[in-house]
Image 1 (cartoon, rainbow, N blue to C red):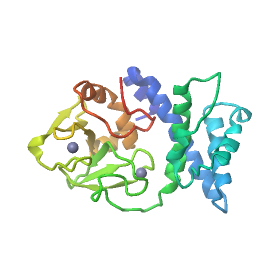
Image 2: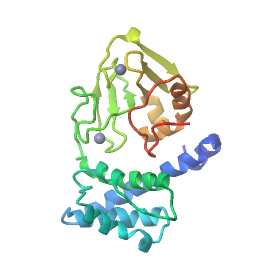
Image 3: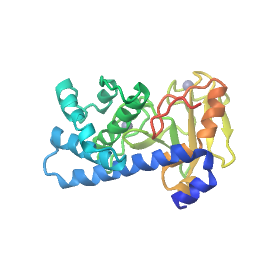
Image 4: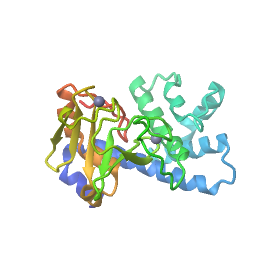
Length: 245
Ligand SMILES: [Zn+2]
Ligand SMILES: [Zn+2]
């Protein structure tokens, strides 16, 4: 399905869908540029991310180039620890704290993706968290063979997990997991033990949308319903939202 058609079909999701598309473009361009550099030096990767951020979000490079100095000066290493960017202190009179947080989340995304190596297969079985970057996941695909693949929203690694089970508290009692379906049959799996939920979808959804993170966005109304009932989402979605109102 074309992206424009999707927005027409779901006009209430226009702004999250547009943001999703920008972040996706940013990640793709960063991945491409990274392949062109010979050495994965920290400063080079920071340059790649900032330059692409500037072009995708149409913000003049001069107005964000100070971030490079700030990052290097702060002693944080986004290449090794992308999440360290989230706590950067940036003073600005023009942009709100909320916008700064959103920007830092978006800037951290390509660094998370850089952590992952092609063909990586590690599972989520041991801890329920992403074996690559340590993040909780709230999204899973159920394959045709009825296996569950958890998908990390940050580094985008997918790995297997128990078909029935909560990745947060490891409750595997199916009578303590409630399933809710939205109108496209994307599911929320509610853990009655720890009040956490994940969303899961089948391979046929994947064929329609081609991207698990897009499925996470189109099913935002399901997050609203589930969160109103008091269930907690442990990880952000692709555009940095965890609490959806
Ligand atoms: Zn990860
Ligand atoms: Zn649980």
